[in-house]
Length: 50
Image 1 (tube, rainbow, N blue to C red):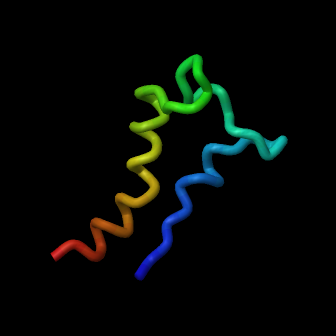
Image 2: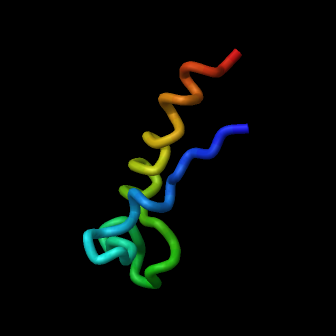
């Protein structure tokens, strides 16, 4: 089992989610948020895919 932290990189210096990653509701990520999110697990997947 592997844990990849995709939460902490969404936080700003104040420990709160950065608005730039989310749509107006502050809950759902915008396109930029999802595009950056997939970069977090991708290196692990690239090494461990079969």
